[in-house]
Image: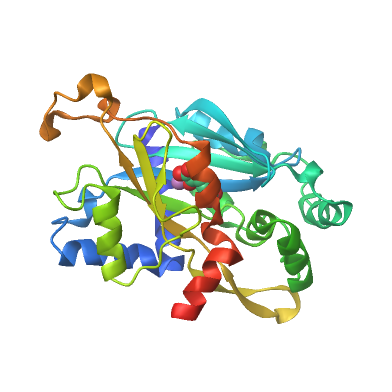
Length: 302
Ligand code: OOG
Ligand code: NI
Protein backbone atom coordinates (compact mmCIF):
# COMPACT_ATOMS: atom_id res chain seq x y z
CA UNK A 1 0.00 0.00 0.00
CA UNK A 2 2.70 2.48 0.97
CA UNK A 3 4.68 1.51 -2.13
CA UNK A 4 1.72 2.39 -4.34
CA UNK A 5 1.24 5.70 -2.53
CA UNK A 6 4.93 6.50 -2.92
CA UNK A 7 4.82 5.82 -6.65
CA UNK A 8 1.69 7.97 -7.10
CA UNK A 9 3.31 10.84 -5.17
CA UNK A 10 6.56 10.50 -7.14
CA UNK A 11 4.60 10.68 -10.40
CA UNK A 12 2.84 13.85 -9.27
CA UNK A 13 6.11 15.49 -8.20
CA UNK A 14 7.81 14.58 -11.46
CA UNK A 15 5.18 16.25 -13.68
CA UNK A 16 4.99 19.19 -11.30
CA UNK A 17 8.76 19.74 -11.44
CA UNK A 18 8.68 19.72 -15.24
CA UNK A 19 5.90 22.31 -15.36
CA UNK A 20 7.14 24.57 -12.56
CA UNK A 21 10.80 25.60 -12.98
CA UNK A 22 10.63 27.38 -9.60
CA UNK A 23 10.67 23.97 -7.89
CA UNK A 24 14.11 23.10 -9.24
CA UNK A 25 15.13 26.73 -8.78
CA UNK A 26 14.31 26.69 -5.07
CA UNK A 27 16.05 23.32 -4.53
CA UNK A 28 19.16 24.46 -6.41
CA UNK A 29 19.31 27.69 -4.42
CA UNK A 30 19.00 25.75 -1.14
CA UNK A 31 21.84 23.42 -2.17
CA UNK A 32 24.04 26.30 -3.35
CA UNK A 33 23.56 28.24 -0.13
CA UNK A 34 24.27 25.08 1.91
CA UNK A 35 20.81 25.10 3.56
CA UNK A 36 20.55 21.43 2.66
CA UNK A 37 23.30 18.99 1.65
CA UNK A 38 21.10 16.78 -0.57
CA UNK A 39 17.71 17.19 -2.20
CA UNK A 40 16.13 14.34 -0.23
CA UNK A 41 16.57 16.41 2.94
CA UNK A 42 13.62 18.58 1.92
CA UNK A 43 10.52 17.75 3.96
CA UNK A 44 7.26 18.11 2.06
CA UNK A 45 4.73 19.63 4.49
CA UNK A 46 1.75 19.14 2.19
CA UNK A 47 0.53 19.02 -1.37
CA UNK A 48 -2.69 20.48 -2.75
CA UNK A 49 -5.28 19.72 -5.41
CA UNK A 50 -8.28 21.58 -6.81
CA UNK A 51 -11.47 20.16 -8.30
CA UNK A 52 -14.87 21.17 -9.65
CA UNK A 53 -17.70 20.62 -7.16
CA UNK A 54 -20.11 18.79 -9.48
CA UNK A 55 -21.60 15.34 -8.71
CA UNK A 56 -19.13 13.17 -10.64
CA UNK A 57 -16.02 15.16 -9.60
CA UNK A 58 -15.42 17.22 -6.46
CA UNK A 59 -13.88 16.32 -3.15
CA UNK A 60 -16.11 13.27 -2.61
CA UNK A 61 -14.71 11.73 -5.80
CA UNK A 62 -11.08 12.85 -5.54
CA UNK A 63 -10.61 11.94 -1.88
CA UNK A 64 -11.35 8.26 -2.55
CA UNK A 65 -7.89 7.91 -4.05
CA UNK A 66 -6.03 9.03 -0.96
CA UNK A 67 -8.47 7.56 1.59
CA UNK A 68 -7.67 4.24 -0.10
CA UNK A 69 -3.98 4.80 0.67
CA UNK A 70 -4.72 5.36 4.36
CA UNK A 71 -5.13 9.15 4.53
CA UNK A 72 -7.62 10.32 7.18
CA UNK A 73 -10.06 13.16 6.54
CA UNK A 74 -9.74 16.13 8.93
CA UNK A 75 -11.39 19.57 9.23
CA UNK A 76 -13.48 21.37 6.62
CA UNK A 77 -12.81 24.96 5.59
CA UNK A 78 -15.25 27.32 3.92
CA UNK A 79 -14.21 30.20 1.65
CA UNK A 80 -17.36 32.27 1.26
CA UNK A 81 -16.21 34.87 -1.27
CA UNK A 82 -14.22 32.43 -3.39
CA UNK A 83 -17.10 29.89 -3.23
CA UNK A 84 -14.84 27.04 -2.17
CA UNK A 85 -14.93 24.12 0.26
CA UNK A 86 -11.78 22.37 1.41
CA UNK A 87 -10.63 19.56 3.66
CA UNK A 88 -7.23 18.42 4.74
CA UNK A 89 -6.11 14.81 5.08
CA UNK A 90 -3.59 13.40 7.54
CA UNK A 91 -1.11 10.94 6.03
CA UNK A 92 -0.88 7.24 6.98
CA UNK A 93 2.63 7.83 8.34
CA UNK A 94 4.78 10.93 8.93
CA UNK A 95 7.11 10.43 5.95
CA UNK A 96 4.19 11.30 3.65
CA UNK A 97 2.88 14.85 3.11
CA UNK A 98 -0.48 16.08 4.34
CA UNK A 99 -3.00 16.70 1.55
CA UNK A 100 -5.22 19.76 1.08
CA UNK A 101 -8.12 19.37 -1.37
CA UNK A 102 -10.51 22.13 -2.35
CA UNK A 103 -13.54 22.27 -4.65
CA UNK A 104 -15.49 25.03 -6.35
CA UNK A 105 -19.16 25.32 -5.35
CA UNK A 106 -20.17 25.46 -9.01
CA UNK A 107 -23.88 25.95 -8.26
CA UNK A 108 -23.11 29.33 -6.67
CA UNK A 109 -21.71 30.78 -9.90
CA UNK A 110 -23.75 32.64 -12.54
CA UNK A 111 -25.91 30.65 -14.97
CA UNK A 112 -23.44 31.35 -17.76
CA UNK A 113 -20.42 30.11 -15.81
CA UNK A 114 -22.33 27.02 -14.63
CA UNK A 115 -23.32 26.23 -18.20
CA UNK A 116 -19.71 26.53 -19.39
CA UNK A 117 -18.38 24.28 -16.62
CA UNK A 118 -21.10 21.65 -17.11
CA UNK A 119 -20.49 21.59 -20.87
CA UNK A 120 -17.08 20.11 -19.98
CA UNK A 121 -17.73 18.09 -16.84
CA UNK A 122 -20.96 16.53 -18.26
CA UNK A 123 -18.80 14.68 -20.79
CA UNK A 124 -18.02 12.36 -17.87
CA UNK A 125 -21.16 10.50 -16.88
CA UNK A 126 -20.09 8.69 -13.72
CA UNK A 127 -17.47 9.23 -11.03
CA UNK A 128 -14.23 8.36 -12.85
CA UNK A 129 -12.43 7.32 -9.63
CA UNK A 130 -14.90 4.43 -9.22
CA UNK A 131 -13.57 2.92 -12.43
CA UNK A 132 -9.92 2.93 -11.28
CA UNK A 133 -7.94 0.10 -9.78
CA UNK A 134 -6.37 2.17 -7.00
CA UNK A 135 -3.82 -0.55 -6.25
CA UNK A 136 -2.34 -0.07 -9.70
CA UNK A 137 -0.21 3.07 -9.41
CA UNK A 138 0.23 3.41 -13.17
CA UNK A 139 -3.52 3.62 -13.64
CA UNK A 140 -3.84 6.27 -10.93
CA UNK A 141 -0.84 8.18 -12.29
CA UNK A 142 -2.35 8.21 -15.79
CA UNK A 143 -5.72 9.37 -14.42
CA UNK A 144 -4.22 12.28 -12.47
CA UNK A 145 -2.47 13.60 -15.58
CA UNK A 146 -4.92 12.87 -18.37
CA UNK A 147 -7.51 15.16 -19.93
CA UNK A 148 -10.72 14.76 -17.93
CA UNK A 149 -12.74 16.64 -20.55
CA UNK A 150 -12.14 18.22 -23.99
CA UNK A 151 -9.57 20.96 -24.37
CA UNK A 152 -11.23 24.22 -23.29
CA UNK A 153 -11.66 27.12 -25.68
CA UNK A 154 -9.79 30.31 -24.86
CA UNK A 155 -13.15 32.11 -24.84
CA UNK A 156 -14.59 29.83 -22.14
CA UNK A 157 -11.38 30.09 -20.11
CA UNK A 158 -11.51 33.89 -20.19
CA UNK A 159 -15.22 34.02 -19.41
CA UNK A 160 -14.72 31.79 -16.37
CA UNK A 161 -11.72 33.82 -15.27
CA UNK A 162 -13.84 36.99 -15.11
CA UNK A 163 -15.96 35.33 -12.48
CA UNK A 164 -13.71 32.80 -10.77
CA UNK A 165 -9.95 32.57 -11.19
CA UNK A 166 -10.20 29.19 -9.49
CA UNK A 167 -12.68 27.89 -12.11
CA UNK A 168 -10.40 28.98 -14.95
CA UNK A 169 -7.42 27.28 -13.30
CA UNK A 170 -9.22 23.95 -12.91
CA UNK A 171 -10.79 23.91 -16.37
CA UNK A 172 -7.28 23.98 -17.84
CA UNK A 173 -4.98 22.45 -15.19
CA UNK A 174 -7.32 19.74 -13.82
CA UNK A 175 -5.59 17.43 -11.32
CA UNK A 176 -2.03 18.59 -11.86
CA UNK A 177 -0.39 19.19 -8.52
CA UNK A 178 -1.26 22.73 -7.43
CA UNK A 179 1.75 23.05 -5.12
CA UNK A 180 4.13 21.24 -2.85
CA UNK A 181 5.29 22.85 0.36
CA UNK A 182 8.80 23.12 1.74
CA UNK A 183 8.77 22.59 5.49
CA UNK A 184 11.17 25.19 6.80
CA UNK A 185 11.14 24.87 10.62
CA UNK A 186 13.81 22.14 10.69
CA UNK A 187 16.25 24.02 8.45
CA UNK A 188 19.45 25.59 9.85
CA UNK A 189 19.20 28.75 11.91
CA UNK A 190 18.44 31.84 9.86
CA UNK A 191 16.36 29.83 7.42
CA UNK A 192 14.06 28.17 9.96
CA UNK A 193 11.70 31.14 10.28
CA UNK A 194 9.47 32.31 7.45
CA UNK A 195 10.96 35.82 7.51
CA UNK A 196 14.53 34.55 7.13
CA UNK A 197 13.48 32.07 4.49
CA UNK A 198 11.51 34.67 2.49
CA UNK A 199 14.59 36.92 2.54
CA UNK A 200 16.63 34.07 1.07
CA UNK A 201 13.98 33.51 -1.63
CA UNK A 202 13.81 37.17 -2.60
CA UNK A 203 17.63 37.50 -2.67
CA UNK A 204 17.52 34.68 -5.19
CA UNK A 205 14.92 36.42 -7.34
CA UNK A 206 11.78 34.47 -6.45
CA UNK A 207 8.56 36.44 -6.54
CA UNK A 208 6.27 36.01 -3.52
CA UNK A 209 2.50 36.23 -3.26
CA UNK A 210 1.85 39.41 -1.25
CA UNK A 211 -1.93 39.15 -0.88
CA UNK A 212 -2.57 40.02 2.77
CA UNK A 213 1.21 40.41 3.23
CA UNK A 214 4.01 38.06 2.23
CA UNK A 215 3.71 36.11 5.49
CA UNK A 216 0.36 34.55 6.33
CA UNK A 217 0.02 33.96 10.09
CA UNK A 218 -2.67 31.92 11.88
CA UNK A 219 -4.45 33.65 14.81
CA UNK A 220 -2.57 31.40 17.30
CA UNK A 221 0.71 32.59 15.73
CA UNK A 222 1.90 29.01 15.19
CA UNK A 223 1.36 28.42 11.47
CA UNK A 224 3.24 30.78 9.16
CA UNK A 225 3.11 30.36 5.39
CA UNK A 226 4.33 32.04 2.23
CA UNK A 227 4.23 31.08 -1.45
CA UNK A 228 5.63 32.00 -4.82
CA UNK A 229 3.45 33.60 -7.45
CA UNK A 230 2.36 30.82 -9.86
CA UNK A 231 4.57 29.95 -12.78
CA UNK A 232 3.14 31.01 -16.16
CA UNK A 233 2.73 28.17 -18.65
CA UNK A 234 2.07 28.35 -22.36
CA UNK A 235 -1.40 26.86 -22.63
CA UNK A 236 -2.77 25.52 -25.85
CA UNK A 237 -6.53 25.90 -26.16
CA UNK A 238 -9.03 24.50 -28.67
CA UNK A 239 -8.41 25.54 -32.29
CA UNK A 240 -4.69 25.85 -31.54
CA UNK A 241 -5.02 29.19 -29.73
CA UNK A 242 -2.25 29.87 -27.24
CA UNK A 243 -2.00 32.00 -24.15
CA UNK A 244 0.28 32.28 -21.13
CA UNK A 245 -1.80 31.29 -18.10
CA UNK A 246 -1.19 30.41 -14.44
CA UNK A 247 0.22 27.00 -13.71
CA UNK A 248 1.32 25.87 -10.27
CA UNK A 249 3.36 27.42 -7.47
CA UNK A 250 5.57 26.53 -4.48
CA UNK A 251 4.65 27.07 -0.83
CA UNK A 252 6.70 27.35 2.36
CA UNK A 253 5.45 26.52 5.84
CA UNK A 254 6.76 27.08 9.34
CA UNK A 255 4.97 25.10 12.04
CA UNK A 256 5.94 26.38 15.45
CA UNK A 257 6.24 24.22 18.53
CA UNK A 258 3.07 23.86 20.63
CA UNK A 259 3.37 25.55 24.06
CA UNK A 260 3.28 22.15 25.86
CA UNK A 261 6.54 21.10 24.15
CA UNK A 262 8.48 24.34 24.31
CA UNK A 263 11.05 22.70 26.64
CA UNK A 264 12.22 20.27 23.94
CA UNK A 265 15.40 20.98 21.98
CA UNK A 266 15.29 21.32 18.19
CA UNK A 267 16.72 17.82 17.64
CA UNK A 268 14.05 16.23 19.88
CA UNK A 269 11.15 17.79 18.03
CA UNK A 270 8.85 15.61 15.92
CA UNK A 271 5.84 16.38 13.78
CA UNK A 272 3.40 15.82 16.67
CA UNK A 273 5.05 18.54 18.76
CA UNK A 274 4.24 21.24 16.25
CA UNK A 275 1.08 23.06 15.13
CA UNK A 276 -1.05 20.76 12.95
CA UNK A 277 -3.64 21.40 10.28
CA UNK A 278 -4.31 24.47 8.19
CA UNK A 279 -5.82 27.91 8.67
CA UNK A 280 -8.69 29.34 6.61
CA UNK A 281 -7.38 32.92 6.82
CA UNK A 282 -3.96 31.86 5.50
CA UNK A 283 -5.40 29.58 2.82
CA UNK A 284 -7.75 32.29 1.55
CA UNK A 285 -4.72 34.37 0.54
CA UNK A 286 -2.58 31.46 -0.66
CA UNK A 287 -5.26 30.53 -3.23
CA UNK A 288 -4.49 33.87 -4.88
CA UNK A 289 -1.02 32.64 -5.88
CA UNK A 290 -2.61 31.62 -9.20
CA UNK A 291 -4.82 34.71 -9.53
CA UNK A 292 -4.06 37.38 -12.13
CA UNK A 293 -3.80 39.99 -9.36
CA UNK A 294 -0.63 38.13 -8.27
CA UNK A 295 0.71 36.63 -11.50
CA UNK A 296 0.68 39.98 -13.30
CA UNK A 297 3.44 41.11 -10.92
CA UNK A 298 5.56 38.25 -12.09
CA UNK A 299 5.14 39.10 -15.77
CA UNK A 300 6.19 42.68 -15.16
CA UNK A 301 9.35 41.67 -13.31
CA UNK A 302 10.54 38.84 -15.58
C1 OOG B 1 -4.69 25.93 -1.95
C2 OOG B 1 -4.50 27.17 -1.09
C3 OOG B 1 -4.45 26.89 0.42
C4 OOG B 1 -2.82 26.21 2.31
O1 OOG B 1 -1.76 25.64 2.61
O2 OOG B 1 -3.53 26.77 3.15
C5 OOG B 1 -3.21 26.21 0.88
C6 OOG B 1 -4.77 26.19 -3.42
O3 OOG B 1 -4.21 27.18 -3.92
O4 OOG B 1 -5.40 25.37 -4.11
O5 OOG B 1 -2.47 25.66 0.13
NI1 NI C 1 -0.78 24.91 0.83
